[in-house]
Image (cartoon, rainbow, N blue to C red; front, side, top):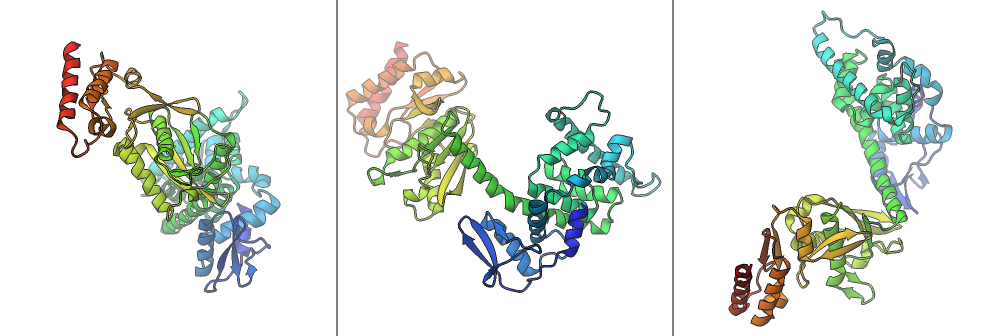
Length: 468
């Protein structure tokens, strides 16, 4: 805490009103002041993994940021100049800092170590409720962390050890924010840590400082702004990088029951043209994940884990790619599957990968892609296997209605009366004994379909029902 306070007091970097540039070099985004990279007070470059983080810091620098508050440039400079060059400054003063933290004192001695409002004070009832809520959050952290740390049976006060363990698992940028909030607000370690770990909200954090009489009520707005800036810093610096690391890990571990790679969405690389069969390969994987335990499809990644990139699909832009993908999903599986599917785009090796994250659907999902037979897919090991309608009926509860179709194009439109009759009777035979099955055409009957073929379909259904 002291290290951040001292650094912030000596921080001098005034470029407000001046023009800065963001230049990409290799895989980094570097802020330039004139012809030279902009440097922190101790000589580190303002260099970032993501353009989003570079923009956040640069706009703060050009507009003057927030003097003496938690602006992104100050947090970044402290992380580079102190954390990465000298190590975590909190480690050497951990015991001293914890001994002054009101919640550590409470968990080890039974009181806050400071004097909140007296019972006679008009603010006492509200402060009592606020602090009671914070104590519950502290106890919630203890309960969740107890299984992650091996403690001695005779350890009378395990809270400091649990807190140290939780802090050690934070990333450097998160430790920076803990120290920045603790130093600027004099809030100790526990409250900033609980805030970052999701055990308390920004408003609970702010009200806690006022209830403990660490801060004045009039400063609540400034404190909330500090917290918002700190969270912006974490979100802009961490999310894309974390996603990139996660995607790299998925690619490295390879295909499995819950992971599959596809080089493209629609482009047949060998034939050099679009191919509906390539689209179907992606769709059947998504359908299989929906009917199984979910999974992740990476479009733009070859079977060997090398990156092809969705650029090979030759769409005008990324938005057109996503629009085409979602149109395929909705028209072939139904619009109600949308809540179970998430799509994101990510740059990997200078190419774009589409990440399709799929959860298990609450209903059986049949793949009804125009030009192909209707099929029901599930995951079997690292592949997506089609199930016959009779097999699908064995997988679902009797109170779930399944509609099995005859292809509206190849059977109803182009087929003869005899072919429609034979196909319908075969379908009814395979599904006999299942009262939750409804024969159907799957989707709209093509215009100008022969009425005789429709009559043949209904006659075959009646014949099958009467026979059963």
